[in-house]
Image (cartoon, rainbow, N blue to C red; front, side, top):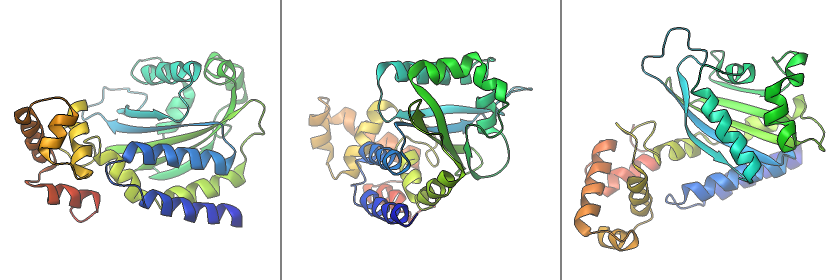
Amino acid sequence: MNDRIDAIYALWEELADFPMGEGDAALLHLLAALCDMLGAQNAIWSALVRLPTPAAGDLLEGWRPRLVRLLNPVPAMAESVRQRMDQLCSPDVDQSQRLAVSGGAPFRTWLLSEGLPPDWFDGAYYRRHYLGIGLADSLSLSWALNDDVRVHLSLLRSAAAPRFNAEDKAPLALAMRGLKWFLRRQLLGHGLLIASAPLSPTERQVLLALLGGRVEKQIAQDLAQSAHTTHVQVKSIYSKFGVTKRSALTALWLGRLR
């Protein structure tokens, strides 16, 4: 356990050294480090947002995926993740998916075997999305950053690896507990958590460039668009985050505004 604690401290320092405009690279670094620490072969990170008016009887209680990142997007696994996310938006929700959003605990970790009956492992979902792509087990974490946004993380092990056990949950929980600031930056970077409306893909490119210190003229050149278009996008970003200048926008990432 001491080796894992040292690895966790080192990971926190490494993530803090990433520039604010390199959030995607930092997230992949986090997932890779957790896989290495806990002997996983892949990882899925997702942000879920609660619908303002979920339908009566909604099995997921209004929670829907908005962002999904797969550490190693090999084709078979990427297609499996796509199908799983599509299923979350359909009436055909699997028991394991319902388990992932159930309960009121704001922070929890669980093994795949916890809460699922033995016959689930003989079912079509496990055969398709685990055994069918060379996986056998997962260790998951869910963290409600506020009433309407949650982050989910699943570490995946291949069929050739031993199953996760209860001792694996503590280091995962410790590693993530120290990263609320990091998860907040990830969600901010996509216009979630604070922004009044999600960012468009191009606005997110502009946002990351602003955080990286680029001026509007340079951003326009980088994106092969006019200075006027870039200026409109910058103003839209400021409006969505409720700020009027770059320094205030940057302060959000530094945790100086609420």
